[in-house]
Length: 338
Image (tube, rainbow, N blue to C red; front, side):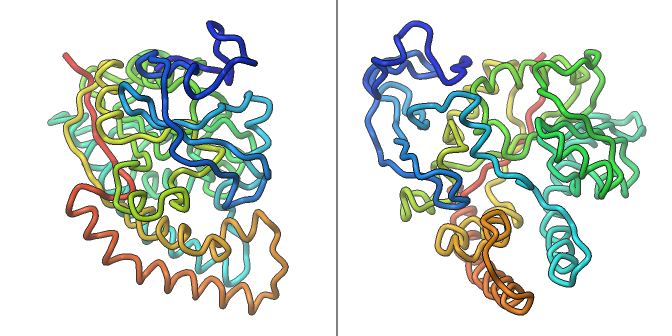
């Protein structure tokens, strides 16, 4: 996959159609339109986009890709969890800590694989760290951590609220020495990038020889997408530029020098909540905060409870689809190829 930057140099911008826009994975010109939609979750725009599928490799992607200057406006302020001091926020942080244990266990195992029998504590960098709660939980377990996010606000929250070192920048331009990290994590990052290859190649350089890369993306091969189509929250128009299936991710990682050693189709944080948000986006706590919904503290608490109930009701289905390797997210541990 190559960088699009929102524009293709080999095809004039005014002539781009789904049939002429080159696929970023295979370069094939020819795609079918699956559906069209707008920002259903955060309502940052009423502009409509298409989701198309390459006729050759079947990679799904947004069309047209917004220019970077346009895409920036689709990321609202506080596009990450910022803990406050009220009861609802404290309950939300407790919930996030509970569901993040799933990620912590997966990454901790990857770090053990990276350091082997050396006995030393592994160092980890989280790319797209947001507010840094995940890194804080790793730091509390004694690991050396570093966060990286393209948002200065997110990096500031990670430092100020969660006490973890974080810097603002792009991984492909990070001024860091090669072979610095045992583990690099990217949770819900690749689907937002014009050029995921540049990020993965940078991660390959920054990892030690036995290093591990942990990647999680929404899984376009899931049952939720099959049943809900454009209502599935995993497409997240217009922020998700590419919609990956596991096969797409395998091809991409192989091209960048990685091989997958472990795969997981269930995330307690993401899969049930993703289904709940697909069914009732107006209840999603983050979306309500970003849209500045008018609600009293009591109404906010009741909506949070209702949303949590919907999440709990979604768990059995999310577990079933994951057991059938059709979960709404896919998380992989990959190692550098010899």
